[in-house]
Amino acid sequence: MKILIAEDEQIPRQLLQFQLEQWGHSVVIAENGRMAWELLQKHDCQLVITDWEMPEMTGIELIRKIRETERTGYVYAILLTSKSERSSVIAGLTTGADDYLAKPVNKDELQARLQPGLRIFELEQRLAERHRELEVRNCLLADANSKMKRDLDAAAKIQQAFLPGRIQDIPNVQFAWHYSPCTELAGDMLNVMRLDDEHVGVYLLDVSGHGVQAALMAVTACRYLSSHKDASSVLWERREGSADYHLASPAAAASQLNARFVLQSLTEQYFTLVYGILNRRTGLFRYTVAGHPSPVHFAQHSQPVFLSGDGFPIGVAETDYEEHAIQLTPGDRLIFYSDGVTECMNVSEELFGNSRFLRSLQYTADHSLDSALSKILTHIKSWSGTAPFHDDISMIALEYAPKAQPISGEVPDQVTLPATPLNQFPQIAGKPTERVSTSL
Image (cartoon, rainbow, N blue to C red; front, side, top):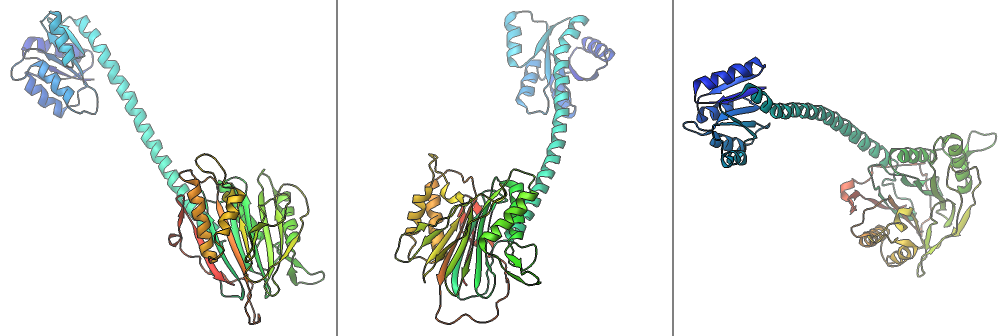
């Protein structure tokens, strides 16, 4: 330990220096208070032994300056005094001295008085070492968090690549969509796909849980729900005895998807799904529901109503799925949504609920699809107030809008262009919102 001695008398100063060095301490000496203060600015002393009465600056004044100055470590101060009055001792301790020694100094008493200072010094050394260890660990943790953030951002971009982009005009259908994850990675996924010259496919799925595991399952499901005609997609079935594929029914596609996830599932995760196919020539919409909230049918000049449909979520158990159908007339709309919409809670933990959702839809009757989704999101945000969003919010709005001219021409299986940049969409609860509107 480095100790500063401030003593204007030579013999007591030398005796103190000799004794302290005998005990293994490093000693710095000063002949008065001013010199002691200057030496303290140059040396990192952990303990000061100062005489009370000194020229230019007294020991009391020196201690006061030490206590008034910010230092990296604590300086333990022992006051040497020939004053024996209790009031003098109290005055010294009140000023900032930690202890005092009566002159002439007794060797055994000096050693005893040094012990508290030594304990403080050793404690500070241990704390400093732990602080250095924490700094190293914090740096490693910050690096790991930074890498994790980069990985999550990259994963989110990959996930967003599966969302519908702007696609070329195809007569008879309009759609808009909204996708707002509550964390970096979402368990919701959605898409609108051209399947062939006559049919458009639409699906919305919601994986149980959140985070990386849910996102991976969502992306895997999207790959199986691809519009490309190959063996990996459940949307197509190979014709018997032929290499050609034909469009699978929604119920068959859901059954095939469920079989794949039941067989390969090593976790307790599952996902809900609604998948449908719209015939753009006739307006017939066929769909199946696997544990997902049923779509809403909103006919012109009518009230929005929930369609029928139920079934086990995908990946829960081996099962078949029912198929439902509804004939759309010009101007009819279908709304697909995740349970993050109806289960959104306000600060009183009340659900937004089905009734409010239907009323919100009713208010959008004279709005475009794009504007209708914005209106619904405004209602949800107003309802939730300051309550945080605990689930992803996803919606697809589809309108059957047949045109007078006949459908003709070759339509590619899938043409997807980049989605609109996230910063062009409104914000919901601090998370990015995407909305794309187009005519099909």
